[in-house]
Image 1 (cartoon, rainbow, N blue to C red):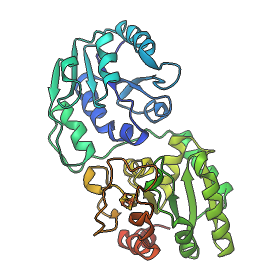
Image 2 (image 1 turned 90 degrees about the horizontal axis):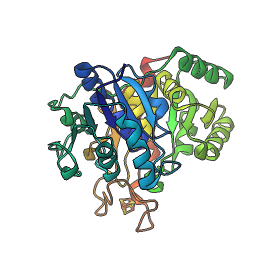
Image 3 (image 1 turned 180 degrees about the vertical axis):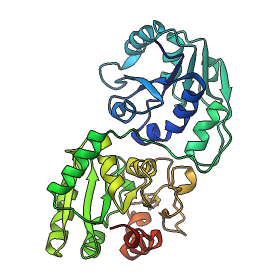
Length: 338
Ligand code: SF4
């Protein structure tokens, strides 16, 4: 049985997680949806209850260019979808739905309107979850959280990794990475040292963050604390399962922030060149969003540049460890879970 609805979302991992409330609404209306997404994001959706099938699209790899769009578009045409929803405002997504000859193609008015059959106004403000829900005519609802379909095997793998690292009680998860260099807060090691006598420390991230994870682990070990670095060995869903078990996650403005929202873990989110008002901040009742006020240069871009264009990186350098410790206290997380 085919799904009548295709969603094409090939943006970053965090964007894919933030699209899950839209998937849930569409699945309620039409039944579980099919989703075209990147190979990296595929595991985040393939176990999601709103999703029937995930179709990986290596837009920068084997499927790149017009040949890839034509090839995948033809394959999608055979599925005879009735609706395509296009939360990502890329020409590539619009072209794919067009080549697939999906009769109703719904995108945002500030995307590639001429290639759509219906468009919706994308709210200029509000949280990204709500902005994406506008594609399905859903009014903003501040309680809507993203979700990740964790399996029992994901949870078991996460618990085994924590046990193997000697983490048996309450722990703080740290996610020090970001693909955008200027969004990395540079004081995670000092923060971990300060937390070492209060909780275990677990560093999560990709293999690229492993060296920093090791540095944090060494510093915590010197302070007499317990730290395990899980940067690289776990899948995305297993990493989300680790975050789910954390008392609190400290993260930059990057994908782990959205993972934490999806698994309802209290979050301290650190914003440098970007602002929470861009729509990607945490919004759980105990969550904290931190940033340096009064910097004339801030914000300096929508995503955060690779490096600070002014060289001083004050938006992150001047955010103190004490500020983050205070924010952790404000969540109450270390007093509530053990
Ligand atoms: S220009 Fe300002 S906001 Fe942008 S990275 Fe540098 S310090 Fe941060």
